[in-house]
Length: 224
Image 1 (cartoon, one colour):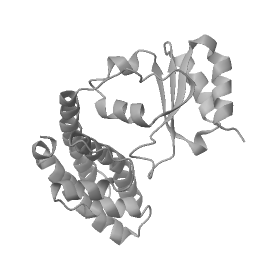
Image 2: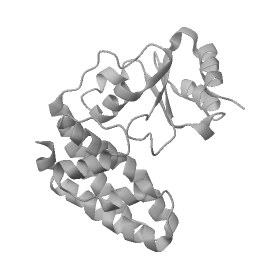
Image 3: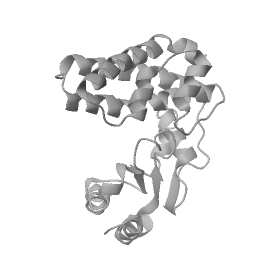
Image 4: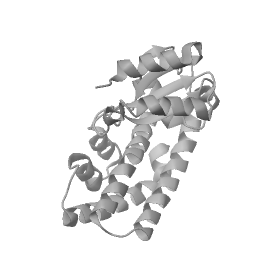
Protein backbone atom coordinates (compact mmCIF):
# COMPACT_ATOMS: atom_id res chain seq x y z
CA UNK A 1 0.00 0.00 0.00
CA UNK A 2 1.40 3.40 -1.00
CA UNK A 3 1.80 6.05 1.71
CA UNK A 4 2.77 9.70 2.00
CA UNK A 5 6.48 8.88 2.33
CA UNK A 6 6.30 7.04 -0.97
CA UNK A 7 4.55 10.05 -2.55
CA UNK A 8 7.30 12.41 -1.34
CA UNK A 9 10.01 10.08 -2.59
CA UNK A 10 8.44 9.67 -6.03
CA UNK A 11 7.99 13.42 -6.53
CA UNK A 12 11.53 14.08 -5.31
CA UNK A 13 12.83 11.68 -7.93
CA UNK A 14 10.58 13.15 -10.64
CA UNK A 15 11.30 16.82 -10.04
CA UNK A 16 14.66 16.90 -8.24
CA UNK A 17 15.69 20.55 -7.69
CA UNK A 18 12.43 21.82 -9.17
CA UNK A 19 10.50 20.54 -6.14
CA UNK A 20 10.23 23.40 -3.64
CA UNK A 21 7.92 21.90 -1.03
CA UNK A 22 5.42 19.17 -0.18
CA UNK A 23 3.10 19.40 2.79
CA UNK A 24 -0.25 18.57 4.35
CA UNK A 25 -3.04 21.13 4.70
CA UNK A 26 -6.59 21.46 6.06
CA UNK A 27 -5.36 20.74 9.55
CA UNK A 28 -7.19 23.60 11.24
CA UNK A 29 -10.90 24.32 10.90
CA UNK A 30 -11.41 21.19 8.83
CA UNK A 31 -9.54 18.77 11.06
CA UNK A 32 -12.81 17.46 12.45
CA UNK A 33 -14.42 17.26 8.99
CA UNK A 34 -11.94 16.11 6.38
CA UNK A 35 -8.88 14.05 5.71
CA UNK A 36 -5.59 15.87 5.28
CA UNK A 37 -5.01 17.55 1.94
CA UNK A 38 -1.71 17.70 0.08
CA UNK A 39 0.06 20.66 -1.47
CA UNK A 40 2.95 20.48 -3.92
CA UNK A 41 5.02 23.57 -4.74
CA UNK A 42 7.19 23.56 -7.87
CA UNK A 43 9.39 26.23 -9.40
CA UNK A 44 6.81 26.40 -12.20
CA UNK A 45 3.80 24.31 -13.20
CA UNK A 46 2.72 22.98 -16.59
CA UNK A 47 0.31 20.26 -17.66
CA UNK A 48 3.05 17.64 -17.80
CA UNK A 49 3.98 18.41 -14.19
CA UNK A 50 0.36 18.08 -13.13
CA UNK A 51 0.03 14.72 -14.86
CA UNK A 52 3.09 13.44 -13.01
CA UNK A 53 1.67 14.60 -9.67
CA UNK A 54 -1.72 13.14 -10.57
CA UNK A 55 -0.24 9.72 -11.32
CA UNK A 56 1.44 9.57 -7.92
CA UNK A 57 -1.49 11.13 -6.06
CA UNK A 58 -3.92 8.56 -7.45
CA UNK A 59 -2.01 5.87 -5.54
CA UNK A 60 -2.64 7.56 -2.14
CA UNK A 61 -5.83 9.59 -2.67
CA UNK A 62 -7.89 7.21 -0.54
CA UNK A 63 -6.28 8.76 2.54
CA UNK A 64 -5.96 12.37 1.37
CA UNK A 65 -7.98 15.04 -0.36
CA UNK A 66 -7.87 18.54 -1.90
CA UNK A 67 -4.56 18.31 -3.80
CA UNK A 68 -2.95 21.65 -4.62
CA UNK A 69 -0.17 22.03 -7.21
CA UNK A 70 1.19 25.59 -7.44
CA UNK A 71 4.21 27.52 -8.65
CA UNK A 72 6.72 28.84 -6.14
CA UNK A 73 5.53 32.46 -6.34
CA UNK A 74 1.82 31.69 -6.03
CA UNK A 75 1.29 32.18 -2.29
CA UNK A 76 3.15 35.50 -2.16
CA UNK A 77 1.35 36.80 -5.25
CA UNK A 78 -2.10 35.93 -3.87
CA UNK A 79 -1.61 36.72 -0.17
CA UNK A 80 -4.06 39.63 -0.28
CA UNK A 81 -6.63 37.71 -2.36
CA UNK A 82 -6.87 34.24 -0.78
CA UNK A 83 -6.33 35.56 2.73
CA UNK A 84 -8.34 32.96 4.61
CA UNK A 85 -6.86 30.02 2.76
CA UNK A 86 -3.32 31.34 3.11
CA UNK A 87 -3.68 31.92 6.85
CA UNK A 88 -5.10 28.42 7.24
CA UNK A 89 -2.13 26.98 5.37
CA UNK A 90 0.40 29.15 7.18
CA UNK A 91 -0.85 28.28 10.65
CA UNK A 92 -1.84 24.65 10.27
CA UNK A 93 0.18 23.05 7.49
CA UNK A 94 2.81 20.40 8.07
CA UNK A 95 5.86 20.50 5.80
CA UNK A 96 6.97 17.06 4.60
CA UNK A 97 9.70 18.08 2.18
CA UNK A 98 11.58 21.26 1.32
CA UNK A 99 11.01 24.79 2.59
CA UNK A 100 8.02 26.38 4.27
CA UNK A 101 6.46 28.38 1.39
CA UNK A 102 4.36 30.49 3.80
CA UNK A 103 7.20 31.83 5.94
CA UNK A 104 7.32 35.62 5.98
CA UNK A 105 3.99 36.10 4.19
CA UNK A 106 1.62 38.47 6.02
CA UNK A 107 -2.07 39.21 5.50
CA UNK A 108 -3.63 42.56 6.41
CA UNK A 109 -6.86 42.75 8.43
CA UNK A 110 -8.45 44.95 5.78
CA UNK A 111 -7.72 42.43 3.02
CA UNK A 112 -9.15 39.70 5.24
CA UNK A 113 -12.34 41.71 5.77
CA UNK A 114 -12.73 42.23 2.03
CA UNK A 115 -12.38 38.52 1.35
CA UNK A 116 -14.82 37.58 4.10
CA UNK A 117 -17.45 39.92 2.62
CA UNK A 118 -16.91 38.55 -0.87
CA UNK A 119 -16.90 34.89 0.22
CA UNK A 120 -20.00 35.03 2.42
CA UNK A 121 -22.09 36.71 -0.26
CA UNK A 122 -20.82 34.64 -3.20
CA UNK A 123 -21.09 31.32 -1.38
CA UNK A 124 -24.50 32.19 0.04
CA UNK A 125 -25.68 33.03 -3.47
CA UNK A 126 -24.26 29.75 -4.81
CA UNK A 127 -25.89 27.78 -1.99
CA UNK A 128 -29.31 29.28 -2.65
CA UNK A 129 -28.85 28.82 -6.38
CA UNK A 130 -28.06 25.14 -5.88
CA UNK A 131 -31.17 24.74 -3.73
CA UNK A 132 -33.38 26.25 -6.44
CA UNK A 133 -31.70 24.47 -9.34
CA UNK A 134 -31.05 20.94 -8.08
CA UNK A 135 -33.56 18.17 -7.30
CA UNK A 136 -34.55 17.72 -3.67
CA UNK A 137 -33.26 14.27 -2.87
CA UNK A 138 -31.01 12.90 -0.16
CA UNK A 139 -27.82 12.53 -2.17
CA UNK A 140 -28.01 16.03 -3.67
CA UNK A 141 -28.78 17.75 -0.37
CA UNK A 142 -26.03 15.83 1.40
CA UNK A 143 -23.52 16.85 -1.23
CA UNK A 144 -24.49 20.53 -1.19
CA UNK A 145 -24.78 20.81 2.59
CA UNK A 146 -21.62 19.03 3.66
CA UNK A 147 -19.47 20.46 0.88
CA UNK A 148 -20.54 24.01 1.70
CA UNK A 149 -20.11 23.55 5.45
CA UNK A 150 -16.31 23.72 5.19
CA UNK A 151 -16.49 27.07 3.36
CA UNK A 152 -18.79 28.66 5.91
CA UNK A 153 -16.81 27.31 8.85
CA UNK A 154 -13.69 28.85 7.34
CA UNK A 155 -15.54 32.16 7.06
CA UNK A 156 -16.75 32.19 10.66
CA UNK A 157 -13.32 31.10 11.87
CA UNK A 158 -11.83 34.16 10.23
CA UNK A 159 -14.58 36.41 11.57
CA UNK A 160 -13.48 35.17 14.99
CA UNK A 161 -9.87 35.83 14.02
CA UNK A 162 -10.75 39.50 13.57
CA UNK A 163 -11.95 39.39 17.19
CA UNK A 164 -8.54 38.06 18.24
CA UNK A 165 -9.81 34.51 18.77
CA UNK A 166 -8.26 31.63 16.84
CA UNK A 167 -10.20 28.38 17.17
CA UNK A 168 -8.95 25.17 15.58
CA UNK A 169 -11.49 22.65 16.77
CA UNK A 170 -15.17 21.78 16.73
CA UNK A 171 -15.97 24.36 19.43
CA UNK A 172 -15.75 27.04 16.73
CA UNK A 173 -19.51 27.09 16.18
CA UNK A 174 -20.33 27.40 19.88
CA UNK A 175 -17.75 30.16 20.32
CA UNK A 176 -19.22 32.06 17.39
CA UNK A 177 -22.70 31.71 18.87
CA UNK A 178 -21.53 33.12 22.21
CA UNK A 179 -19.51 35.94 20.65
CA UNK A 180 -22.39 37.25 18.53
CA UNK A 181 -25.44 35.96 20.38
CA UNK A 182 -26.71 33.91 17.45
CA UNK A 183 -27.96 30.33 17.11
CA UNK A 184 -26.46 27.97 14.54
CA UNK A 185 -28.47 24.79 15.10
CA UNK A 186 -28.22 23.73 11.48
CA UNK A 187 -24.43 24.17 11.45
CA UNK A 188 -24.09 22.05 14.59
CA UNK A 189 -26.40 19.33 13.31
CA UNK A 190 -24.37 18.97 10.10
CA UNK A 191 -21.12 18.99 12.04
CA UNK A 192 -22.29 16.34 14.50
CA UNK A 193 -24.18 14.04 12.12
CA UNK A 194 -22.28 12.97 9.00
CA UNK A 195 -25.31 10.95 7.95
CA UNK A 196 -29.05 11.56 8.46
CA UNK A 197 -32.33 10.20 7.20
CA UNK A 198 -33.93 12.30 4.48
CA UNK A 199 -36.60 13.98 6.62
CA UNK A 200 -34.14 15.12 9.26
CA UNK A 201 -31.58 16.10 6.63
CA UNK A 202 -34.02 18.28 4.71
CA UNK A 203 -35.26 19.95 7.90
CA UNK A 204 -31.66 20.60 8.98
CA UNK A 205 -30.73 21.93 5.55
CA UNK A 206 -33.56 24.48 5.61
CA UNK A 207 -32.41 25.69 9.04
CA UNK A 208 -28.82 25.85 7.76
CA UNK A 209 -29.87 27.92 4.72
CA UNK A 210 -31.57 30.44 7.00
CA UNK A 211 -28.53 30.63 9.26
CA UNK A 212 -26.17 31.29 6.34
CA UNK A 213 -28.53 34.03 5.12
CA UNK A 214 -28.55 35.57 8.60
CA UNK A 215 -24.75 35.68 8.72
CA UNK A 216 -24.55 37.18 5.24
CA UNK A 217 -27.21 39.78 6.01
CA UNK A 218 -25.35 40.92 9.12
CA UNK A 219 -21.77 40.53 7.95
CA UNK A 220 -20.90 44.20 8.57
CA UNK A 221 -21.80 43.79 12.25
CA UNK A 222 -19.68 40.66 12.54
CA UNK A 223 -16.48 42.02 11.01
CA UNK A 224 -16.31 45.51 12.57
